[in-house]
Image (cartoon, rainbow, N blue to C red; front, side):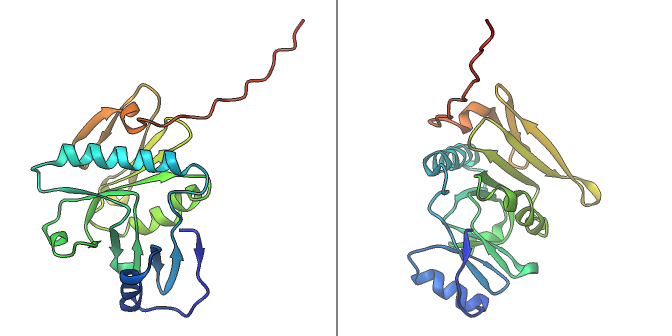
Length: 202
């Protein structure tokens, strides 16, 4: 999310009605709505490529399992906090999520693709909010400027354990039983060439 619109607080029903007719997607946090940027403001093509790679990989992996992968045009509802978010990619395996085509309440895996403008909130408030979902088993953050994937997994006693992956690693999403090369998540992504200092030694 990028910026709160200056308007009166909305009820969830008013927000959902607005989303049905609005050409712009909004996230909803306890009465306040936030317009969603198209992709991200710094590397939208790379952001979209990574999200599509993840969704495509998960869709193929989950075929016939009863689980489904969704991309950022479907909302998740965090009922305990009166929040509606649009994750970049998520998976639900819960039969109760089959009733509503545009809204899901029981994701087991949520993936967010990081950008400079969203990383702080994705790692901070959003992760804190997502932890209220009893169904959520895994929260994944994917860096779009280098090969780095952080997987947070729910453990006992409310703890979340982090496993990080880098170049050459095989990544595992334990919540859905998928394992693959980290490079598969970054297909068609061109990373910026680093500026190396010139060696001035004589």
